[in-house]
Structure formats: structure tokens, C-alpha cells
Length: 381
Ligand code: BMA
Image (cartoon, rainbow, N blue to C red; front, side, top):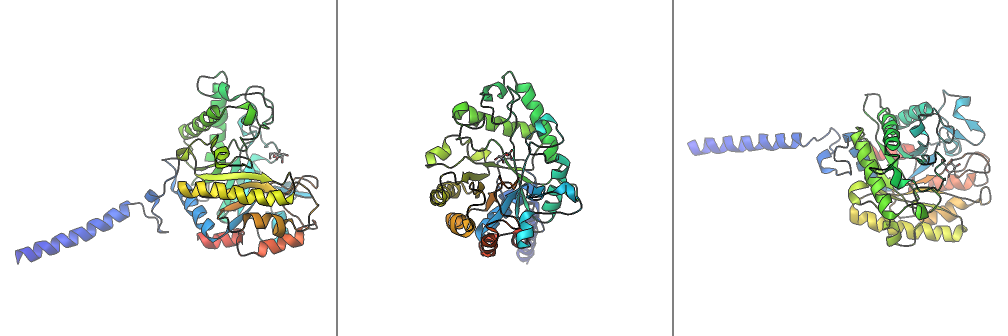
């Protein structure tokens, strides 16, 4: 008798104990076990982990469509013309917003009011808040100035060694990261939580057009710059970021790896590809690069994306979407594809009302695999 009682007691305690253990495992109401989600920043917020989880989930269903500065301006309009309305060239063509929204924080380091493309940081913050609220993914790149010359990102004067620890411009770089951190931490949702963002600094480093790339930096210094930037952001209490590494078109895994700082500093793998050498080689490059990046991503258990793309031959191809871009990305497993900005008729990368590929874009948008904001919201909710 005594044995039976003790046994029942033991079993009931065991059940209560295991329930407690599960609760302590930080299970959210959405059933996501945040302890089981590993991102590069060990102190990442639950929202950042949730974003990571959602990106994985999206990549299982299709490819989210992204556009840079989508709601800030388009062809023939600027948001400031009608500030109360959230507009987008893509929405005007398809009826839906892009699912991924890219912004660039170049000049935040100088404490300017506007970024290098005249987008005000207040407007950027406001749109990021509105878009995050609608379920969009936010990705941010950084065309920062050259810290040695105060020239632009395209000023090739080598600068990395001067901002690494012990370098002459270190103090300046720490101030720049502090200003960047304040911006990240000012992105708050309705409940006051910091909005998670995919941060994609020092992109296209295998080309020599930026001071942080190619002939202007050694791979060792690049990796060190990445790691120290990552640490500085953490020291400035930024824990809302997923880090994306994205070279320009590569020819091999070795080329992709050349500047790679390591799995422990990166969350999302990416690649930027434009059709400088015509449509056929573009489709081939997109396919082969997404294979290279996809295999590496699979081994590292990380999502991957076509982090920048677009047709360089503006206004020349009515079927670019279904005949050139889609055959490259189809069934790739990429989580998203981000088209670069619609700046002006001589520099635009997505379509707009009246543009030559508008009808083809509508067909592309109808494809089951290509996901817009409303579709992504369904997947992640
Ligand atoms: C480039 C061009 C530039 C722009 C920069 C940063 O590709 O679009 O006009 O300043 O990106 O957005």
C-alpha cells in the first residue's frame, strides 16, 4: 500500500516537473522554442529569433519578393508628395506590397537626417514600423563613407586597418557604430519591442568597387572588420539583428568563402547578381550561384537569399521576369529575392505602372512560388 502511494506521488511529481521544464524552455504562445533557435548573437532577442524561424519557414514554401526603398519613392513619385499614404510601384502594378523591404543606412554614421539616396531616417523608421506591423521582413545594407578620406563607399582608399582595433580612425569608427546602434534600437513596434532586422553590411566584398572589397582590403582584414563590427554592435546593446553575408556573383565555393567570417558570425547567406553580361549568362549565374550558396547554407543549416538583383538594361526587355529571372531562381530554395531601387527611368530595377515589363511582372507575381506580403503573412501567422 505504501509503495503504491509513493509511486503515484512520484509519477504525479514527475509530470508536474516535466511540464515546468517545458514552460521554462521559454515556449512562446506560438509554440516556438526560442532556446532551440541558434543565431549568431547569443543574446539575440526572441523577436530576432522569431524572424529567423519565419525566414526558414518561408523558404520552405516559396521565394518572397523584395524591393529596395519600395515605399520611400518610385518612378515619378516620392513619399513626401502624400505622406499619409503607403505607396509602392509594385503594389500599384500587382495590388500587393513586396514581402521584403530593403533600406540603406549609408550616412547614419555622419548623423545626417537623410541617407545617401535622400531617404530621411525618420521616414525610414516610420515605414519600417508600418511594414513590420504588416508582417514584412526588413533588410538593411550600409553604404557607409570611407572613414579615412570621408569620401563615399566607392572611394577605394584602403581604410580597414585604420578602423580595426588599435587603428588611427578607431575612435571615429566606434562613434559611427554607436550612431548606427542608436538607429537600430530606435526601431520599435507598438509594444515597445525592438524590431528585428536582417543587417547586410560590407556587401559585394569580392568586387573592388567599395573600399571594403577586392583589391582594397585583404580577406583577413575583411573578416576581422566583420567580427569587430559584430562585437561593437553587441557592446552597444544591439541584439535585434540577423547578419547576412553577400558577395557579388561568384564562380566557386572557394570564392564565396574567401571573405567569409565564419558560421558563428553569419545567419543568412546571400549573393548579389546583376545581368551585366546579358540575359542568358545572368540566368546561368543565378542558377549556379544559388546552388553554391544553397549547398553551403544547407550544410550550415542557414537560410539563403538572392540579396540584390535587377535588370541592368533598363526598359529593354518585356519578358525579363518570367523568361530570365524566374528560370534562375525557380526551385532554388532561396528565402527571398530583392530587386534594387526604382530611382528614376534611367536607373530602376523593379517594374512600375506603364513600364515595358509590367504585364510580364503580373504573370511572375501570379506564380505560386513567388510570395508577396499577404502570402508571407499567412505563412508566418
Ligand atoms: C547603387 C545605386 C546608387 C545608390 C547605391 C546605394 O547601386 O543605386 O545610386 O546610391 O546603390 O543605394
